[in-house]
Amino acid sequence: MTTHTATASGAVARAAARNLPTMYPSVVYDDAPAAIDWLCRAFGFERHLVVPGPNNTVAHAELSIGPAMIMLGSSSAEPPRKSPQTLGATTGGIYVVVDDVDAHAARARAAGAVIVRAPKDEEYGGRLYTCRDLEGHDWSFGTYLPTDAEQR
Image (tube, rainbow, N blue to C red; front, side, top):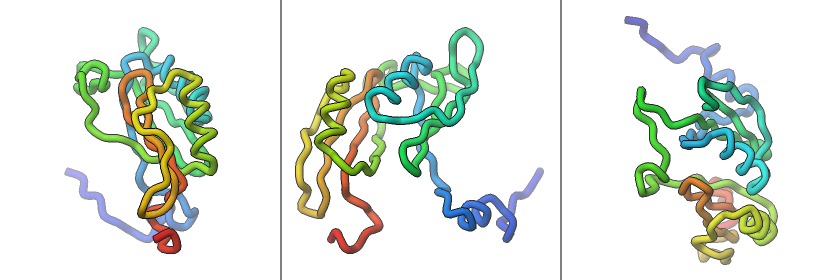
């Protein structure tokens, strides 16, 4: 058995030295190629890496928006990975910081996103909206920075 330990030259230290995040949300889509196109058009993501899988699937993809990144892939039987569309429910959501909430919401709506919570100023600071993508994932976009104490 291999034991992994943190070292000064480990992945976390390398990320910190380059001011890179150490958490990347990962989501699953039944039609990942279509989802990638839609996420870029609706939300403004850019393709960073797309690794095709067999039968028009995506083995692994990385999409960026500003300094943030998500990973995604196609649903599969092994290991069992299902989209909210297949499950009939969502199990969580992703929050992304944007500069103009209202313009972003209009772009998402025009691309077919279902707005489940209209843009609104929040009591705790910032402006936010929530939408559902083409396969049922919940996405929130806002100006609130969780680590910015000046907003509170």
